[in-house]
Image (cartoon, rainbow over all chains, first blue to last red; front, top):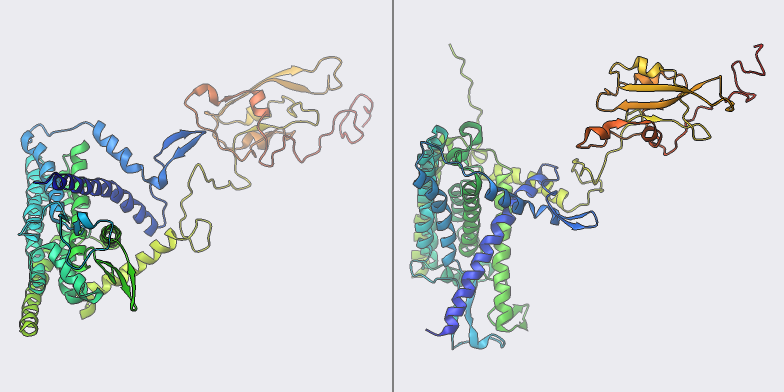
Length: 375
Length: 197
């Protein structure tokens, strides 16, 4: 294997790690400040580093997550005396690692042709090609379902090993809710698989990019988008689906007995899961890296042609992907701070009695349309 | 028997969640945009939080803040050590030791002055009775300042010099009430020259 590929692979892994490790603390800040703005408050803006002259560097509160992390590290790591020590340590790891692993198949940009970086990409590029994703697996999106599915285990184990009735109830709720919504989540995407005729996220993006803005998944599969979005919020256990950690009835739910960095890992896992689901939404429904009116050799608009070299196009693609993801994250946060929590029976009823039949109907209709338009 | 309360009827649009959620989001997004993209000073910004201590709300005019001892024109305290304030004080936080002016001082024989004037601001309940009791307008609580925080008890024992160093809310050390020194034509009382009143 060419050493260039190894370097490219390491570079991609670092890129993904940087994305994860910046997104999750910044999301904590966004969450708190955004809620403050909605509720006419200022939010956390005080934590800062003294920079001399009586001034403090606060960066509008961006240092609060840093202070939180420091606090988590120095806090006592309490393990319930009658709890299971091994499982207690394992549960937060199980709920964080899969969400990070899911990033492996997310395509941030189109294939990079290393020999054409500084010139305009020809129609049939050759030479060394590097896909802008850590691993291009042929099971594609099923890999994401497979690894994030283990997140259920993390929450359930956390509830089981804590020797606490609230934690156990929270763990049960988490398991029930996540298993149920996993079904809808998968089925709502089946119609997309049928439409795009692929399981690979990068091929889905290419399918949408070929057809311009109106080819984006949200315009072709609006119902699947809503079902998947709701399911994704439920999967990441955020309001209005935060029953597993409903503090009004369950203390803190399945992580009641967790403190310090172990609790921090649950929180991080939740935020990373949100980022993963928004990145998936971007790739499947919002054209992924596709910049409207931009093709691989530049921007075509109103008969004009702005020629851009391959590097610029790639950078614009990655920025476009991140921009769409951030916009979706913002919307997710907005929903989180706008809606009240469902009751548990409502959550289950909505999943099994409304969303599941709707996703099946969507598959049926999409099947008919694909059948009659493809022939 | 329990009374059954019928569930409120929902229209199809309300039961479908999505349009209602969109309505709610319109409300919150509107608030978010209004508060995020306007400056704190502007009219449409709704944030009420005071960014203390960088930003402070001014106290009302009659706010009872920390005490101050008012000055005479020559910078000496107006206080005549009559002990009215320490007598009126329900918290017994004022300690005054009176002393006579020197024999060559024109005030000698008319009034005394406080050699020691100490207020224990930790005992004080900020009732304002001392201000009410003072016949000379010598003690006031119009500094517009609350007690600055400290970790040391000694910092809360205010002596005469400290009390005289605190200005009023308008920045002056004197008061608006005129002071009639003995010997002034405006002096209303009995003095050495005018002993037949």
